[in-house]
Length: 267
Image 1 (cartoon, rainbow, N blue to C red):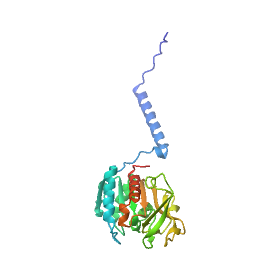
Image 2: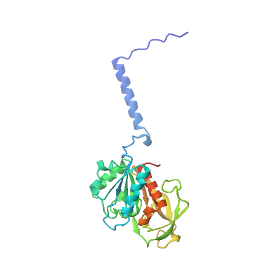
Image 3: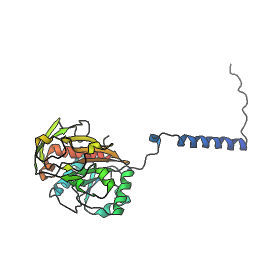
């Protein structure tokens, strides 16, 4: 037997306004007290396209064309398009928004003007990705944002020689294919500071300074790392000086893994 439900009062216009006002107030209070992770996600750059930037205002690596060709081939295999430029006017908010990541391929010196720097900072803040290769660390010494994004600036290097790379992270796509050590030949950079001392940097691989001559970082010599930085993602590798690097399967996979991370395609 169903009991007859008592009639409910019909809200008056004044009552409806009071209810709506109270509900709106509750929404405002909830939003104000929401945890940081619940904040609206900023618009991320479009996925599936990478910009390779290789402008040089200092030393120019003859391996740059090989690097561009390798990244194009890797993109074709992995499913992302690649545009390459040395024209800094590409650094506008509208154009950068087309790309999931920007790769600085052995750039050197002061390559962006203040307006272009501001556009790139905004791009990173909106969730953009950065992949720095080799001499990307020899770039924009007067731009603190870039130094933090890259993780460390170049200081010096010895002659090209064979060295042992110690892999510290086997989960990241840039190093997941490698064993505990990786013996190869390249130009091994020393850095002005140790990126391991930076709160956000996670080191992927470091050099065994006892395996070659000319290391100056007192036995703790990171050579590849990644981080989340000011809203975006950043990957850097000190490898990639030689033309031969870009035909080396293990290095190509290292490079692809770093770019994939920068695009947001891997956590």
